[in-house]
Amino acid sequence: MTINSYFNYQQKEPKWHDWELLRHGQIPHNLKPWLLDNGSLTRNMQRNCINGRFKVKVRKQIIKRPYPSESLMLKLRHGVLTLIREVELQCSDTAWVFARTLIPLTTLHGAENKLAHLGERPLGAILFADPTIQRHHVQIACLLPHHTLFKQAQCYTTAPQILWGRRTLFFLANKPLLVNEIFLPTIYRI
Image (cartoon, rainbow, N blue to C red; front, side, top):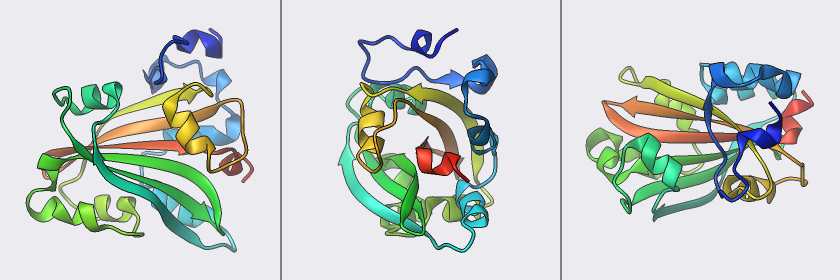
């Protein structure tokens, strides 16, 4: 199976797959540990950001409709609005990951309202410190230049031919949120 067979070129979204269904030989060797890690990406980046400074740079936080596959993953009706937070996860001012988090507005009721006010604090630090967190479905995708997420991530780095990403459905106090993590070429080099 080639990379091109993962996609319908008419789609603006990549085809997301469960990890077990991918041919792992196509994924860059240095990227596999990042994609497979089931712990906090924030903690993992902090450990690997040797002699550097980890930080979150917020690019955008808006209320908007999710992409169709994101709505499906969150089991939202078409047109339902979510809080969308797009950030760069950086080491020494170099972006390693573009992250897009979708939080249904119903998830933001009660104590989870703190998720709407993270600023430059990492979401992972909040999620993995909460005893109610449950990690559900994890999917992997290869993104090509015509995919919307590729275009969003690519504007923060040099133009690669492909990008790899994963997305994870979390439940915090039984309320859903979806985290997309697009790994930039700068992370492959460590």
